Length: 111
Image (cartoon, rainbow, N blue to C red; front, side, top):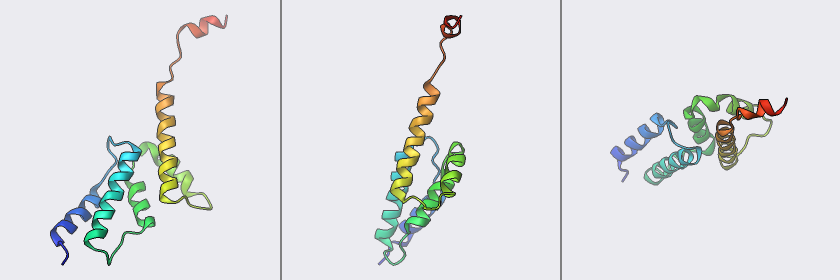
């Protein structure tokens, strides 16, 4: 017998989930775990990879919109794992770029 209350709770969690302050890896893991729990309670209605990707893409922080839009324009769409790896790389690059600072002495050294 299905645990209907738990199933409803998990489905609500999936519908309301947002990336917030979570890293890409943590957010993908959270979403995959929610889907795995839902599947365990209701094996007759699995959440397929395409639907999970739509949930994840919809709930990413706004800074990823341009990147995701470009990926969605690709002829061959990445798998969930490929999307996660691409997003983690994008996150890493964004962190590196945020950490780059120009020292004040550089402009003086050019003269």
